[in-house]
Image (cartoon, rainbow, N blue to C red; front, side, top):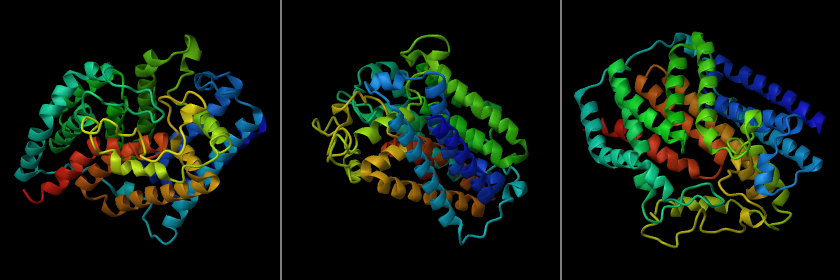
Length: 413
């Protein structure tokens, strides 16, 4: 076990430096870097904590007994996923000519809004703000009325609607847009700060404030690449805030062991998935979980028997342990889809797609609106890497889409 733990670290560092050779210092503002941070915590650091610090709450929660063979195979499978992420990225960059030092030539250019930019923002506020503000005020009551006991780690709204609950996320993104249009002035930050305070105080759905903070951090770094140490320190601060807010949700004991919780349990869930699928389930999902894309937009209030997740479910992980509220990760999602082949497909496409997003930035970095849209969309990928499947599209719908709609409408209003 020790050999695999240390070899996993060496392999991760090797891949990291290969990525650095491909991207240069611009790696820090790429989607690939976000994945590398996620992977390093979930699949490189976590095995050390499990083996040397005795972290086992995730396994106890799932009622799953870990053995050495499963521990080693989980590490190996995560390494396979990381390799094919690199392969997808390499294939995407193979025939591209990129100025990898473009950030050194990037200076902050505050966007100069026209009246139609504000007209479009006002229209969106009139549509979203009434629902968003009301949802924000009643957020605790809404949380108590939802059901989260399902294998897909999503809220089930039987008496209300997810559109209403998450409308306050869209409202927050409009406050971020207002902050951008006002050239990041101190006064224009006050509504956004109030929103962030309410969301942090609420505690649940921490992505709501993490996304905003990561967006602001990326904007700072793009225009101040020489101050990347401040950005990295800020990332540690965001991670600490994430943990601090979630401490009350930890079920385990006090002290250092209190960090042994379900916040980052993707290694444990991958151990469970690779052991159960297909040995116990006798089948893979064969990517049928993505059929959820067609049923998810329909409010449950109009479809009482709406399935949780995909309308076609070949197995339920809860039949083999307690997988409630846990997430599969992108690698686990690939494994459930079709084993090693599923991981190869998912991670290669992910590497290719994430690199395409980065290439778009290198060609449009002088466009302040494009840069802003890029930094708004990038943090949503955190949810994709952690959750797998299409759940992240729901977050994208409420966080990034309002700003994308603003960008499209402003040209016609």
